[in-house]
Length: 120
Image 1: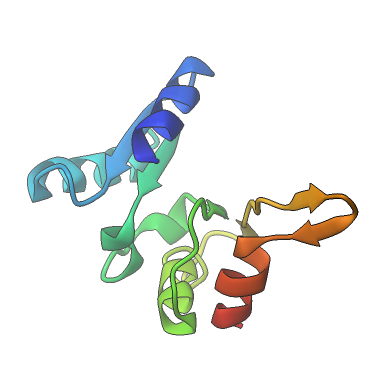
Image 2 (image 1 turned 45 degrees about the horizontal axis):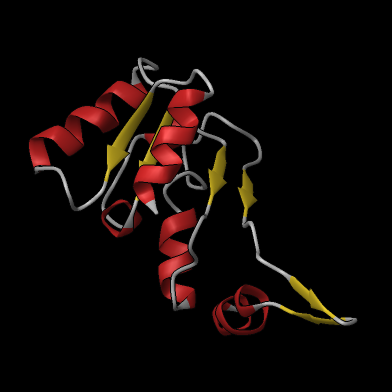
């Protein structure tokens, strides 16, 4: 999921960095610092960005969650990377794209019915 998202963002003309479990810690921290220094526009993160990451709240007021975590605690930790004390912003925006299927008038969504309801 990360690579197609990264490619689409880069193709749209944005500078993108990765904070995932794939790259080594030094490379991951470098991407975070470049994002904070506004040298990259978008930072793509996976599970490792959910806890123990500070500094994003100074430069980021929008979080797009491409794949929801499984628990409310993980969700709160993730949102807490940008929605926290000393934030440079008065509000933050959390966007959760959801796949919704319409089959012969029946609407169904794995994201909404299972993941999001579990988090709530």
